[in-house]
Image (cartoon, rainbow, N blue to C red; front, side):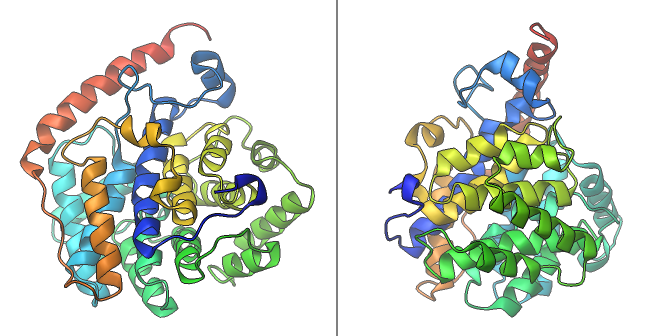
Length: 364
C-alpha cells in the first residue's frame, strides 16, 4: 500500500468486506473512550496518539458495530427481499434492547419500543435526522455493489425501521454508495473530486441543504483544508454532532483526502471530537472498503477485547457476505453464542461507568 500516492494494492472482494466490518469495529472501539468530548479536552486527557484505552490497553465495540453486524446478518438471511430483510433487522434490534446495551440513541430507543408494541418495521421509525442509519449500511453497498436499485431498496428498509427524516436516508445512501463504488470499481487510486461529488449528489439530488454541503465539500477540497479545519468551517469546532448532515460530510471528506490511508482517515475524523465512536465507525467502514482488512493496523484489530461479537465473528460474517454476494454459497447467517450477551453488556456498562469517572478527573 502507498498512502502517500493515494493508491492501494489489488484486493479481493473478500478482503474489502473484511475491511468494512473490521474497520467499523476498529473505528468504533478507538473512538468510544472520547465520545462526546470536545477535541481540546480529549487531547489534554489522552494525548495525540490514538490507541485502545477503554480497558487499560484494550478496546470494546458499541452499538455502531453491533448494528452493522445486524445488517450483515439480515442480508445473509434475506438477500432478495427488502421487506423480509427489514423484518429480520427489526427483530435483531428488539432483542438487542432486551440484552441491556449500555447506550441507546433516543430515536432508536423510541423506534424499538414501537416495534415491541406491534408497529411494523416499515412504520416503526420516528422523525429524526440522527446518524444511526448511516453508521450501519456500508455492508449493503458492498453486497449490492453492482445494483443501484437494490442498494436503494435495502438502505431504505434499514433506515425506516428507526428513522423517517429524509435527511437520515440521504446520509445513509451516501455511505452505502461510497462502499458500493469501492467494491464495484475496485477502487485503488483516489477518484477525481468531480466523480466523488457527483456520486454524493445522487444520494439527495433534491435536498438543498445537502447540495449546499456538497458545495462546501468541494470548496474545502479546492482549498486543501484539513478535516479538522473543514469541521470548524461547519461550526463543529467543539466536536461533530450526531446530526447526519454533520457526521457524513466530515467522514466522506476524510475518506477522499486520506484515500488509501486507513490510519490517516481515522485519525483525521477522531481528531474532530464529538460523536467519535460513530464517526470512527463510519470512517473505518469506508476506509476499510478501500484498503481491505489487511490494510488496517494489526494492533488496532488485535486490541479489541470483546466476545461473543468478536473480530473473529466479524471475519466469518465478512467472508460469508463476500461468498454470498457472488453466489458462491447459499446465504445464511453466522451462528454465535448470543446467550452470553447480557453478561457481556453488564461488564461493558461497568467499564463505561468507570471510564466516565476518568473523564471528570483533571486535567480539565
